[in-house]
Amino acid sequence: MIRGVKFVSVPVRDQDRALEFWTETVGLRVLTDQPMGAQRWIELSFPGADTGLVLFTPEGHEDRIGSFMNTSLWCDDLDRTHAELAAKGVEFTRPPTKEPWGSYAIFADSEGNKFVLSARP
Image (cartoon, rainbow, N blue to C red; front, side, top):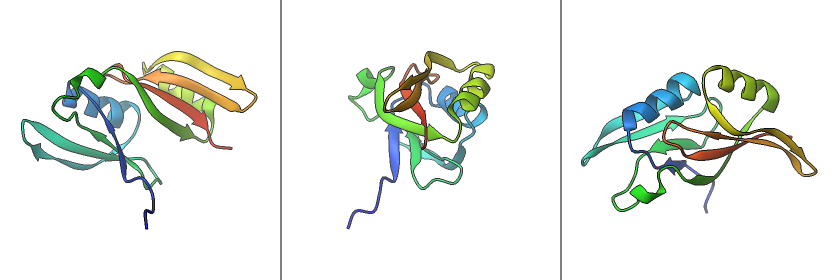
């Protein structure tokens, strides 16, 4: 039986820059950072969550770097998280926006990948 999502892979051009962004700026923790071919396998964890984030680009998928990620991240307080991340220099391409179905914002990581951020109801 499938029990959940283990990790989401984020395509990156510069693994060191992405690692610094996701750990120092966003606050994720390193679970694994080890050689894997010409790159490294870098697996990160979100505080209190089972799903992780992997900073790895499979060969032939470099064209995905800097694209819209079909991934939505959640936080407890969208306005507060937006303010905290923006103060750390995170680029938001859409500030917190309220819709009938909920509130969300969109931010870019160090590689230009765009993520939806929303508050969990």
